[in-house]
Length: 485
Image 1 (tube, helix red, strand yellow):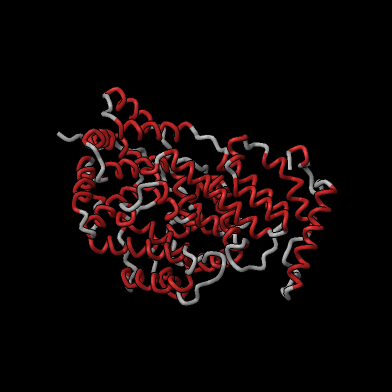
Image 2 (spheres, rainbow, N blue to C red):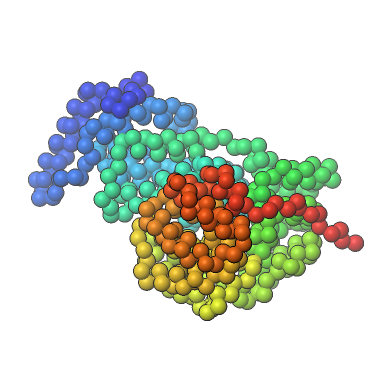
């Protein structure tokens, strides 16, 4: 069908197209019925299919000829929608989105992406090529693409919503959810605008150029000075992501002398802009290098810490490494397909490491609290009853500092996206009740009251300026590291 034949409007598909759909439907359903299979509710009504076909022109107009030529899954989506299989159409649309996002990642900087997407050293060392992108879960692909600038915050939130619907309303799982034609077209337009045609912003482009230069040749003193000025313009989350990229470059087996020298010169300039959470995470990676007997990587990583006098961010290696591994294990189980079977074992292991007093080192507090809150809120599909009592017990053992972190969990886009579901919103109310007796600071109590009084659903909390101002910690100007003699 040409664009001239695709008219905008809810019911604008040509009459002959409708007639063709109805003839196809009759032949197909007669064939199914003839072999004794059910036909009721198998195909979406023709009017809804017309709405998809009638609004395709507006959704596809941003795609140029080259983009269209490689969009096979969009073709399959349209074919499935025309046939009345909207759940399959949504599955094809998500396949197109993921394929395009992987293509953008591969064309940008694979090493940088893997360094940001995968914090576990034992897993990271096995990832290097575009083929390995399939080993990254969709939720982590979206998160890391946002962190390196290939997705905007808004795009990440919108696509995470589409991802949720793909997991719970498409042909990926048995379900009884009814999809509409306008929903499909809206999701198609979202994927086109936020992934396929999204331009690369200036910071992302400059970061990519810097990483290429670091790997290709020794930087001049003038380039180092210019790059230091660039660090001053980095948003905080991009500074953390770039630090992960430099850390990965320096500790990689493939690192060349020129690359190592470049990182050593730039690392002290970037360090003042790196968040404490990211700093602790680098310290945890050193402990995991040690625990995995990856001694060359541990030595290289420690050199970076020595360069900026970062001993305060080094953890006690063994317990920290085990805790960090257990948190990753819980998140992997919770986000996986078979989470009801794997989640109880994962949370029991983490609970045993945390102990009866709920002791978690400061370097892992934020990661631990976010993981437990995310799992407690459920994946939106159902409560894992075998794990839920353990989650409650872990939340009830939070101290006032950890409770303050849990109260601010909605700031995280993954958790905010989860709060779009009714089941997660119910769990969120239970979480607030658990935290009520734990928050002690005036700011925390004011934030709790503001959350309780918020008139909209909790997934909108992070969009409210007053709420976000209460949730934000006092901003401290970064201090330059002490010069070494």
